[in-house]
Structure formats: structure tokens, C-alpha cells
Length: 188
Image 1 (cartoon, rainbow, N blue to C red):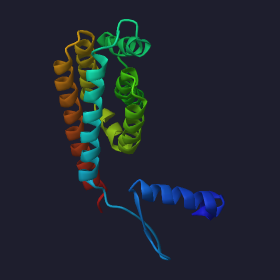
Image 2 (image 1 turned 60 degrees about the horizontal axis):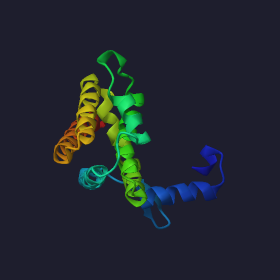
Image 3 (image 1 turned 90 degrees about the horizontal axis):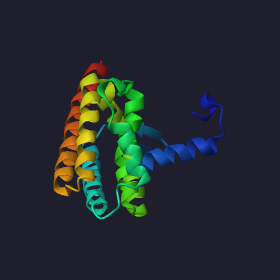
């Protein structure tokens, strides 16, 4: 691999060990590496932790001055737009979606929660992006983020939690369907 990448062995080995730590590879002593089988259960657990962290952030937002909060202002500019102003590019919307969820944690002001959330976000990014391969999911994301943000601004924390939980659960289900479909197509 080092020869193919025209790199020294040390950074390649470090990258392989990192992929192993993150659960993507298995190492076989003196015999090489193997890509681990896709584990839906693992990703679903990460989604569950994500819901817990984001709902906790919503509770913390309840006591903050949201009218003057710069992160909330950024979210309003992004998600309170007319349908014709909505982006349609899957990569751009995926990045905006990720920013929405991370911004909730950032706005809540707990840096450790935000750090843990970012780690989870990085682990599930590869499958979360599949959610934006369908135009209907892009539209739903704009609608749902707007509803969540509206509930946050109205200090309807329970409503915001319900909306957020449903939003993430639906996204998780859609990603699972798309992943299964792509795995089925990829099989010889």
C-alpha cells in the first residue's frame, strides 16, 4: 500500500491502525488487514447516542438568550428560507445538515458534549450522506430543521425534542434502506 500511495510505511501503518481503532478494519498478526463487515447495529447505537446528546442540548438551550445568540442566528439564516432559496446539491445540504446538528450542541455551550457529538458525527458521516441522495429527503430536511428551530425559539423544548428525535429516526431508517439497496446492488 505504501508503494502504491508513494508514501513511507509509517504514515500508512498509522492510518491503518486508526481505521482499526475506529472499527473499519481488522488486523491479522503477520498476515495483513481486512475490511470489517458493515455493522448496522453499531451505527444504530451511534444514532441513539446522537439523539441523547442533541436532546440534552435542546434542554440547555431553553435557558439561554437565543435572540442574541450568533449560532442560532446562523441557523435561522440557513433554515428559514423560502423553497426557491433552498439548496439542492446533496453535498452542500449534507454539510448544512451536519452543521445544524453540531451547532445545536455548540450553542448549548457544553464543549465536552459538542466534542463527543462531533466524534459520533465523523463516524456516521459516510452513511448519513446517503440520506441526501433523494430530493424528497432534502426537502424534508429543510422542513424538519425549520420546525425544530421554530420550537427551540418558542422555548417548546418537549416539542423540539420530539421533532428532533423523529427527524433523526426517519433519517436513520432512510439511510438503512439506501445502504441495504446499495449493498444488494454491489454484490456479484
